[in-house]
Each structure stands twice: as C-alpha cells, then as structure tokens.
Amino acid sequence: MAVTRNQSKGDSVTSTPMKSPSPSSSYSGRKSVRSRIDPTTNLTFGSIVTIGIVASIILQVSLAYLVMNDKIKLNGKTTVQSLMTLGNRLEYILRFQAIHVVWLVITTALVVFSRLSTGAVNPLEGFENLVISAKQVHTNSMEQFLLIFVNQLILATNLAPDIFIRVIPLLNILFAISRVLFWLGYPKYRTCGFFSGMTPITLTTIYNAYALINFLF
Figure (cartoon, rainbow, N blue to C red):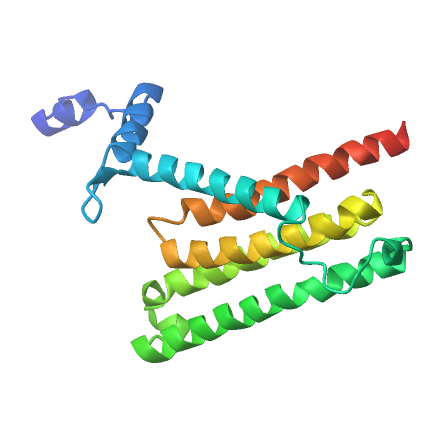
C-alpha cells in the first residue's frame, strides 16, 4: 500500500510530554516573590514580613510583661479566690468573649458596607474581588476566634487560679489588638496582626496538649 506524504508526516509526529516545574525553579520563584519591592515602602516583601514578625514579638512580650506582673490589671472585680471552681472560671472566660463578638459584628458590617458601596451585592455576578479584603478579614477572625476560645475553655481545667486570672484577659486583649492590626495591614502588611493572634493560639495549644499527656500518663 502506498503511503502518502501527509500520512508519513503524521506518523512521524510525536507528542512532547509536558514538563513539571523543577524544585529549583519553584524555589527561584518563591525567592523572587520575597525579593519583590513594595512601591509604598520601598522594602522587599521579605523585609516587610520580617519587620511584621519582630513587631509582633515586641507587642506580645511587652503586653505579657505588663499583665503578668500586674502593671496592667484586667481582671476587674474578679479575685483569685473566686476562681476556685470550674463554673466560675468558665464565667470569667465568657465575660471576655464580648470583645470578640463585638469585633465579629464590626467585620460583618464591613462586608455589608463593602458590598453596598461597590455594588457587589449579588455574589453570583462576578464582582467578589471588590469585597475580598473585607471577607478575608472576617473569615480569618472567625477561624482564630474559634481556636482561641476553645483553648481558653481547656485552660480552665489546667491552670492554677493565680495564673488563670492574668492569662485569660491577656489572651483576649492581645487577640483583639491583633485583629485590628490584621485589618489595618491587610493585605500586604498583615504579618504583625496575624502572628500576634496566631502565636498565643499556638502556645496555648501546645500547653493544653502537654497537660493532656500528663493527665493520661
């Protein structure tokens, strides 16, 4: 059978497999992102993240020192003696949650205001990018609130009353400050606010896990 020219060319064509990005190219891509210059501050994004982390550490250490050494008293009329029972400890925790409920109401209102002011009222019309900043602040606040709240409930079973009376207001005041910083800095300068909220969540989680291990074994 005669083979036509087109058939011959078609038979000789082979598909070229797509190459997946190599680890070196992925690393160079991440490196280029960190080296990108922010036009507002003339700093690299890597430097902005570093400054945010350092500022977060300074904020947390300073506030912890002031509260734990009674330089700032945030326990109101509550005394150590009144925190001997689990019920009183839970009541003490719940009183401070009013801070977070107020903040969540504010972030919800910010989402509503963003929708009304930009015209992105219908989420299905494709204009969600106009309200993404307000939505992300609200969502991140909800996620971290759940984590810090549950950790406080567990701390009620683990901490001595004289420490508990200081730690609970410290966690809640620091969390409130971190949420405001996260909102003001979003999206490029949110590092300080994020770490100021996530660090106490991480530390309390580790402590509660350690207390559970001691309880079990």
